[in-house]
Length: 109
Image (cartoon, rainbow, N blue to C red):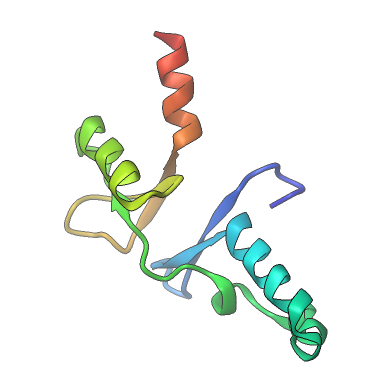
């Protein structure tokens, strides 16, 4: 995440289906928890994405109206939506729509 200067990645299973999202917030929470629990601090380097990722992912799809996607971001207090192939195939990720993307769009207009 830090090398690519991004705040989250989509986690997929062996079939390339959506499993979750791993964000810098997930990593910060794990680090903060480990700081207060000495035994768990030792296991931090051995953790995998599946241990820390958010599993209940809120999604959008390319044809969903932008105001509807924006409503999801505000209602769920999240920073990004995983874009999935379509409304019926919500486990096939094709991208991410972030608050940063929307801010850039607003700034351009």
